Amino acid sequence: MISDIVIANVLASACLILIIYLLDVNEKEPPWILVRVYLLSILATFLFGKLKGFLFGHFEWEFPVWFHHYVVAGGFEELLKFLVVMIFVWPLKSFDDETDGIIYYLLAAAGFAVMENVGYSFHFVINPYRFGLATGELRPYHAALRDIVLLRAVSGHIFINVVSGFLLGLARTRRRLWLLPVLLIVSAVLHGLWNQAASTGWLHWFALGLLLLDVFLFMLSLRMSFYFKFMKRLRFRIGELIIAARAAKIDPDTVMLLRGIHRNVRVLRRMQAPALKTAAMRITRLLPARVDAVPLNGEDGLLSVLVKVNGILGRELERTGWRFWVGFFLTFSVSGFFLLMILMNFV
Image (tube, rainbow, N blue to C red; front, side):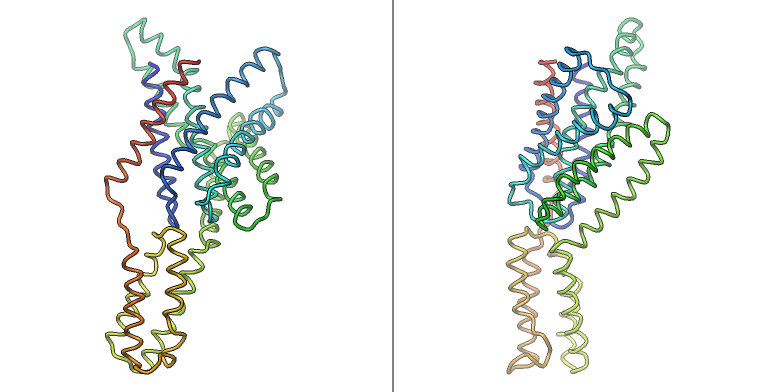
């Protein structure tokens, strides 16, 4: 039974992480760093759960429902994820873009969620399992396990922490450290509202509103990034060159090359940040401001510049094969499974 619960929850978590990774359209973060953040989040959640269980069991604390929603669950759980992110993510050199805050925070949330989901699975699946052993009918057990995994695979932690990651990215890239305490307060309040909505039957409406907010913040983070701004400027300059080249009646092949470069600017999204910034400088230096600014050779000079620019864009196009995606999925699945199986021995 233990292996069934762990495997089901880890696979659901790995699928979620794969979706998160695909959302990172600007610059893919190093997979091994993502694995480390994910596993450390699982470990931190386990230790937090043991400490919470000891304190509540030893002192027999009882709190009002609102206090449990906003402080015990919202405050302390969000503080744990915040500490994981600040200790293991904030110092990373790869954390150099607004969207990175969302990606890394969601990784920490996914690690927290898979550990919590395993706990929920044990709590709600154990009785159907005993019933199945006694009667030989295991369908209630499998149904309970399926419902827990499917209902909690897209956890509230993910919905809530898109907002947290957006604020974290702004705090890091814009050097606005005052946003960090705001991040913590907003996360705790949203977490409390999520729990309260779940207890009052309004969770589906609250989740829908939070999802719309998440989509807006993610799109906003993309538009605020260096990648988006550079590509927008580059496409605008190449567009001006196309207009000027047509007006100057330059060779149609040159204009066609310009238009091809204009379409392929999005290739730069697949480059790592240092390589992109280096290439951006080279491309910017190579591109003339105007067609009539090309020295001496006119069309030939412009054509040679465009060929160089096209070469820079073309060389940096990297296609990710299916082997990478299979390996990425298996890495999170296998590492998460073994870590959780080890931690289950201490339950």
